[in-house]
Image (tube, rainbow, N blue to C red):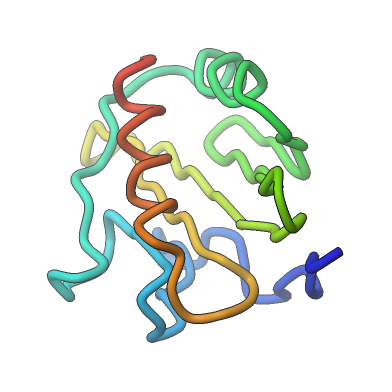
Length: 122
């Protein structure tokens, strides 16, 4: 119902995921802003990460490579879509993550909570 359009700026460019849009509904391990910053995930395979993501409700894998995973998470109530990306950074030995709502301003902490839920399942 409130899906919005899929962003065109997603993916890994020069070792970086897209920056957060400046609204308080995004969490990113590559952000320098305290309100957006989350700790990167521990290094695992993309296959393991995919397994965890697919085990969560209302998810759709959009793109997968050997070092990148992009999934859409849909909210139960209104059908809002969040875009969640993972970059397997072998140089830093971590998985960088970005979770952002497509629409609105506040997400009531949902994107940050999602990252922490994924961390707990790895």
